[in-house]
Length: 436
Image 1 (cartoon, helix red, strand yellow):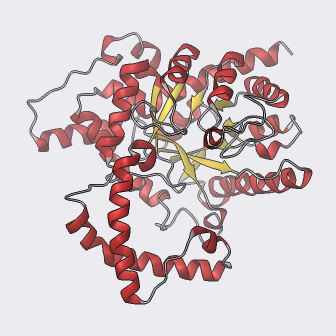
Image 2: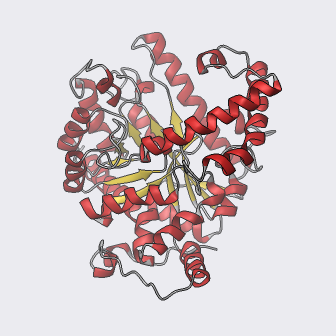
Image 3: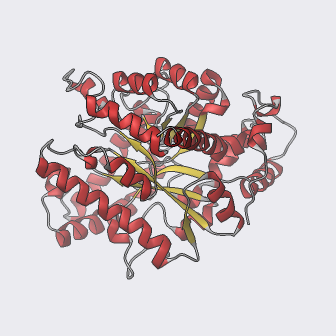
């Protein structure tokens, strides 16, 4: 059973918990691995972004099985991942009553699915946490921990009272937009065409910031535009998070945070959860690998008489056709794997855990270790070589140990920093509620 082994308040005061690392080069590889295993067992590992498909939250088909999903209970057990934030994600649609109704129905379905898993399907194996104390209690009881994040506040429509409703249903963070401008906030995707809807937040978005502060929901700045994020951090009375973002200085994509946003996040007291998403970690390296790997996959597909189609065509398929297509495509990829490993990896290696931890190193150096955390974006496109699903979570700890991070520092990166922000957000909410 994994235990929460340090007092965070004291840890923040110790030099050992600063960004200063004390690399020990005297350990053999076997000793390094053994040391990392001990640390991984003792700290609470928390991943802030795991997307879900509610088809996998039914009595017949659910996360108690080792599904093909990157996250499920068997894979969490295998990799020592303690806390999974399951995401109530809604893609951006029309800003109309019909669009809002459909978005709310989607969010409702996902909230219900998460509660079904933790309350009906597997309450003996996984429990929903609402506070940092819940996380420690559930972990001490030997169960896995679910938490809820909302990716895109679009489902609240024009009804600001739904912020409290989502908090009451267990949401502990929420972003004001995703890919596409919402009724609340501009999205980072405006960088593609320089077309903006609000030039930051809308009036309703500013109200949403107040409501999230009041009801204890951490504000997530991973997808909104830079102007929106800067405005959020100016307005918020509580620290914010970026639930799945990396450093733009290392990889210049609009989904990563630039140094100006990072410095403002540090001043705000928040935390950026570094994301293990290949194209956000190293786009150039990822593209080179993909181009060479896809050439081999297409060659094998042609030999098998299988046609690889565009994503738009896949979206137009019915459920049975889509499933049949993906099964066939997966089989082709498996056949291609030995050739990819032999022909591609030596000359164009995939983005891996070391590349991912480069972003952690940069962020720690730039804004301080207490403002940095870890996320995967599993089942939403995330994963790097070595951390391709929850079963490989240990490899992140191993790389951190290899680079000289101490157990106290690793505990902060994996969960301590995020839980500290949650505590502070909930303290602000309690104060605001008391003030009426």
